[in-house]
Length: 415
Image (cartoon, rainbow, N blue to C red):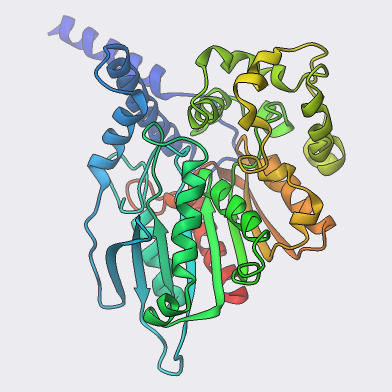
């Protein structure tokens, strides 16, 4: 009996050691976040083991672990009609809110889910693992705005790599914006938004920029709403990357690996990327672009604090030679030319304090404002990456509910 108690105590101690990570007091629901992060780390370790055994790619295994617990068939309610279909060969899930009695045409949001271009699904709902809730989010937006939400099931890494995801969202959105399709869904052509979170925010920002090159599409989007978006791959040592390098649910090394996977790059470059060897002073093209995201001038002193830029004198020129996509505005919309930014619609950007991506959202807001675009920057001091999709038990974070409500309120007022 005594030995059993000792073993149990030891196991509990090991579990506590695994779950516990030091978190700032200001972060929302820290113990709940520790448990969520432990679940996600466990899923990653299992998928890495499967990859090591040669059974399948680790991202396919990880996505299976996530989606298999949370995939939800299209289920309509009294207030929201849900249907799976495809737009020009791209799978989408359409959520139709009930129109108001005095409305003939409804608003619409084209939504692009996050997940590092490799994980999650538009059809994911509340799952035991608590990883993602995109079906719930889109249902809530459709219901509260009485709107049509088109959630795009773009192809994921490793079955497709950049720029295929960009092509998917452009193709599906162009299809939806056809007059006959908008008429079918009773959508007002002057009240369409593009939106997305994390990697989906990246694709939404890229989509908005790509549309500026097409005069027939330039005015098709009334607003864009970007939720803690991924916007650049040139500098992995911004103040937020330095401050939050080990923060859940997206530590720096994980984000860098997502970029490498997105470009089908070599994992041998990960450590070099983390210390900015790919944008060293001996990489001529990077030197030109670095000026566009000079965070010492784009970020306020309250953000920069005592952090110092990390710029290597000599780096590894092979990185950009083998992965030139790192310096492409079609993957890093933060480095787009000002002429492109000037044509973008009114913009909402949500950022979280405890997120490696915080600063690129703030910098994008600054660059858009300088280009003459009306921008709302909505910052949450207790927020963490991914928090907006965690609003239901057992992953009901207070900041998740507040970010979702703030996002929907902005759309309601501006769309």
